[in-house]
Image (cartoon, rainbow, N blue to C red; front, side):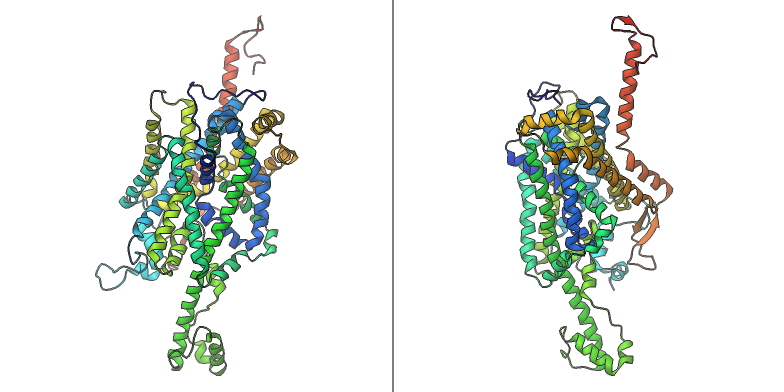
Amino acid sequence: MAGTPGPDPPADGGGEARPAWDSKLQYLLSCVGFAVGLGNLWRFPYLCQTYGGGAFLIPYVVALAFEGIPLFHIELAVGQRLRRGSVGVWTAISPYLGGVGLGCFTVSFLVSLYYNTVLTWVLWYLLNSFQHPLPWSACPLDLNRTGLVQECRDSSPVSYFWYRRTLNVSADISDSGPVQWRLLLCLAVSWAVVYLCVIRGIETTGKAIYFTALFPYLVLTVFLVRGLTLPGAMQGLTYLFTPDLRVLQSPRVWLDAATQIFFSLSLAFGGHIAFASYNPPRNNCRRDAVSIALVNSMTSLYASIAVFSVLGFKAASDHGQCLDRNILHLINAFDLPEQSVSRDTYTAALARLNASQPARVAGLPLEACRLEDFLDKSASGTGLAFIVFTEAVLHMPGAPVWAVLFFAMLFSLGLSSMFGNMESIITPLLDLGVMPRRVPKEVLTGLACLLCFLTATCFTLRSGSYWLEIFDQYAAALNLILLAFFEVIGVVYVYGMKRFCDDIAWMTGRRPGFYWRATWKVVSPLLLLTIFVAYTALLASSPPRYKAWNPRYERFPSRQEKPYPGWVLAACALLSFLPTLWVPVVALGQLLARCREKTRDPLQDGRPKPRGGRAC
């Protein structure tokens, strides 16, 4: 960063002009596309529903104000001022902080592996949505073609299509099995699409982002309008947002709100630093940070309304089918006329029969049909996208059309996030000059995508979904929290608060106020440390386990909970801290290099200096 505000710092060591965005809208859409991802659609609604509906918004807003926006502002400011990728930025601030940039680079690489695998699954479902009826709407025939497949009968058509037809998942993580060629082909197509979009950096992603960032909003709006016209939509939204302030007494609520903000904004990946480095030096990065963060949070809220309007319809449909089964039992057991009991009169009819013949009623296999119980059957992550929501789509008229729209939206959402992930990988490689300048950028980008594709083939094995859960849980969480902590410390206490504020004043024309200085200097670092300690304690409180899909499990279709083998636990521990290890390794390497440099030069200030003195 420049020592004094005013002149631009050197852009790159290579002497080439740095690319620039075609327009401010292109930059904003790229940042929004990177921040708004699959988690906004399938993680935020789940947290709202789990933690007291509207009450969850209280810790969420607190975390946004004191953690999300301040950290986001730092990343945009340092990227814009230094005009480098993550590695170059932190090396320029201090060579001892070069490991922070390498840590961000490593996290982005690991996340890209499994994130694009999720897009592989989405692509598989999208391709299977162009048929009627949908392939997950009914169980297939067995090999003898005399009945239905037993595994499907014991679970459901939706679950069978996901676990068997898509993943062909093994019953144990140690049983890797062969590569699933259909998934490998979809994985290759997904990486080919990513490569074509990022082939020339922001020159190509800047064009694609107009579609990938805006199309999901169009589809969400279509789902919202359609969902609000469906029966049960209001019950779903009421259940989602009914506040339960008692949950605020639980520390877990505040922890989940803080981590949701952190990952939702894609902090500490390095992508926003890279995007901001292509901005004009005097762009108002403060306004960008606030506006993008608010758009991201409002998108999460908007997606929650659209998703739960449809899930409310699904719950109402399942509740109605449950009542129909009970009504049929009553009519058959008591020889009642057809249509004599309706859904509206079921409760009164059951009470009347139970009062007159309680023994006979007690002997019937009646189900407890409560709408709240069906609304409780929500899920997050892949469970929401590939099981709950796909089943909800089956209840909608014109199901294939809605399935195509839904999975096209998911693919577009994930693709725009992949642009930021790949920028976090490729920009540092270009800035570091890992390949000669004469090698075209297209070749470097192609090699990076090819390496990611070959590494991600492990997720196409039969145990691949279990490993994806491990990467999702351990590769990013703790590393990003620690890297963000080092980012704040590096800017505020290594570079210096005054110098940083001078640079922001030069870029935006206004010095940061008390809110920014207080959050950067005290609140955000303490909050990050608290989150790290709490998250670590949460992971250590119980041994890591996973849920396996095992048709031979006595409680099937419930998934069998198993402990991880020892070698898998070692992999989990390695993933948890591998990217962060760059920080002490690089700092120690710099210190040893300085010591070696000084001991090799015994003459300093014109006087001899003994080796091994106070040079270190």
